[in-house]
Every structure is written in structure tokens, then in C-alpha cells.
Image (cartoon, rainbow, N blue to C red; front, side, top):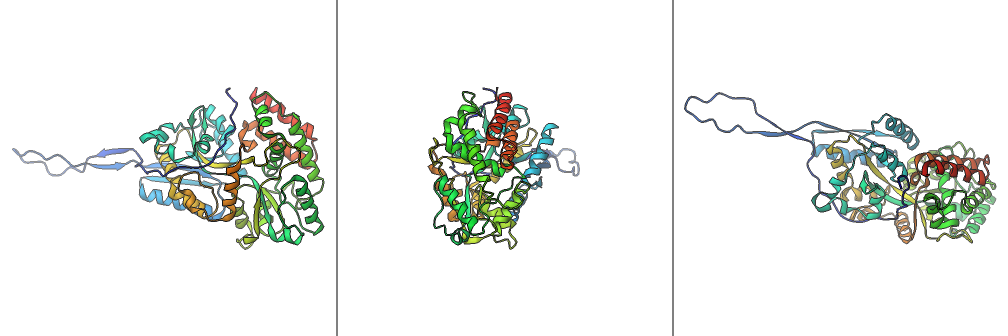
Length: 450
């Protein structure tokens, strides 16, 4: 099945890794000294090991100050231990990253290390020969590095048995909400069903509160809403059927999800200008207490905080609840939509780049990421840094999931993922019917998946 991906489940685990020396060593003779006099035997000349200079290029999308600064400090620490290494970092906003990466991939010149969500997009790059096989490094010393990861999380970055990257985080999408605004609207507890969710939207609007912040200018934030509705309505078998071509993206659950989404849109529950708003605008609305909810991943608190006027976000007023069950749906209410973050390795990456990624994914550095609430660790020991009760709650909910649905725009081939995002935006805008959106996705799937 050349272009069919398995939907991977998983979470977290396992140990620490040891740094190894990097860079290619060359033997350099010292400067010649006086010649030995006649009859004397020259002593062996001492040699010194000098590592050749190595430059690593690294693109990441962690724009929040605290997170960005932590990545930089890790790079500085690595360079301090390996003076021959230079690390050139480019920090890009999500959409700018995707656009720029597409361009360099078309030219066949990927960065040495770059942000990846695994799945179909990464598989396409692997098929095109743009990524480096890192199985040898993962399996060295009896699998010392491989065994630090949970099998499921690491598997998201494997294709046909070959790892082209590794994860540094794994979590799920859920609703982040403002407890104070919920209380102002007379809501005493988060909703557990889609009907209760609608009732809460009504209460918030009646209280003059914007119920939901969403950045549809970037498309993908709203895509998660449709994907979750598909998952709740159709369950695991529905998506896997469409993916493996025993079913279709025009099957009833995909259409029903569009209908449910447009019923919500009809209430006009979003902030003004949501169709053109970016994800940053969405996070700003939440961080400044101007909206009651957003549907987003585990990174949301850090981004809300960074986008708020006072850089503090809404503090203890922030809460989290899983996507409600849809009455009559075939999906298990505990099933999760989400994914993680990871590093893919470019085809021309030097050995030092792989070694640097080993360093970044060490348990010690996983603890540091967890401590600033930007990641749910994927390496054993990293969980020691988790202190935020909301992220611990999210991690516990994720552990209940019997089925884990990777983000649609990453699980599917890039062309089809792009059509998913475009079609969901059209559902929000009312320029497509649920049937038309489902057909557009199916048309792309036929072309990409066969």
C-alpha cells in the first residue's frame, strides 16, 4: 500500500540517552620541531584530535518567547560541549514554516532538522528521498536511543519500518475554557454532550460573551472541530475505511459532521472577523479573556500567555475539557484527536544533527520542556517536569483513548490534507454544503490514495 498510512495510537515512555561525540575527527600532526641529531632515534610525534567544523540548520515553529528561549539555550549548551558545531536556527510562524518548507522541499534542499507532525506529510517527503534514515542511530548500542521512546509515539515518525524523525511531544486536542466567563454565564460545569455544548453556547451569548475564538484565516484551527465531529459520529472504522479505500470520504459520518458544524456556525458563536483571523488572533482573544473557549492542543496555554497583553494569560481561570460526545454517534467518547510535535531529519543532515536531536530528546531536556508547560513528554523520566494540573488532566484523558486519530491534515497526503482544510473553511464560510465538502475531499483522496 504505497500511500496508505496506518493511523497510529500511542503515548509516551521510556529512558534517557547518552550523548556521543559528534563531528568527524581528523588527525593533525603538530608543527615540526628541530630535527634529531645523527644517531638519535626520533620519538613518535604526538597527535591531537581536532573535530572538523560542522554547521547544522534547524527550523522550528516555537514562537512563544519562553519556549523559543529554551530551545536556544539547549542549542547553546550543545555547542558549548561541541565547539566545532554551529547551529543555525530559524524560528518561523506555523503557516510561514509550511510555505517555506514546501519551497525548499521542491528544490530538494531540506533543512537538517525541522518541525514535523509525522504521518502522511512526512511519508511523502520520505518517498521523495528528502529525509535521512536514522534507524542506525536509534538502534545503536542495542537500541539505547530507540528504547527511550514509547513505541506508539516513535511510530508516528516511521514509514515502512524506517524512522525519519523522532517525537518530542504527544498530546490531544481539547476545549480550553475561561472558568470566570463560564461562571458569568451561569455554567457550573463543562459540557459532556454536544447538546449541552450548544446549550452553553446559548448561555454565553445571552450573557454577552463571545463563546468561541477561532482563527479560520489559518484554516487548520477549525479543521480540528470538523475532524472531532467526524470521529465522534463515525468512530475509528469510518476514517480507516475512507483512508484504506474500503470506504469513502462521502460516507454519512463525514457529511453529518459538516451538518453539525454548520448548525454551530449558524449561531454565530465566534469573534468578529473569525474567517480572516489567524491562530495568533485566536490565542490573543483567549489570553486576554475576550472569548470563553478555543479548541486547541496542549500548547495552547503557552501561546495564550505569550499573546496576551500582560504576558500572563488568564491564569487560574483557564480550564480544559475533552470534546463532548455526540448523541447517537458510533465513536467512543474517550477517543482522541491530536498528535504531537517532532523533528524530521533532512537527507543531507550531518551526523552531528542526529546527535543534537538525541540531546534535545534526552530526559533532562524533556523535563525542562514539561516544566514550562509546552510539551507532554514522550521520553521516560520527562514526566518529572509536569506540574501543571491542566496538562496532567490532558495526559490522563489521552491515556483513556482506545483510538487516537492523528490530525487529518497530517495523517493524509499533503494534497488531500490541504483540501480538508480548504473544505472546512468553506463550511465555516457557508460557501460549501456538507455534501460538497465531503465530495471535494473524496475527489482528492481518489487521486492521492488510489
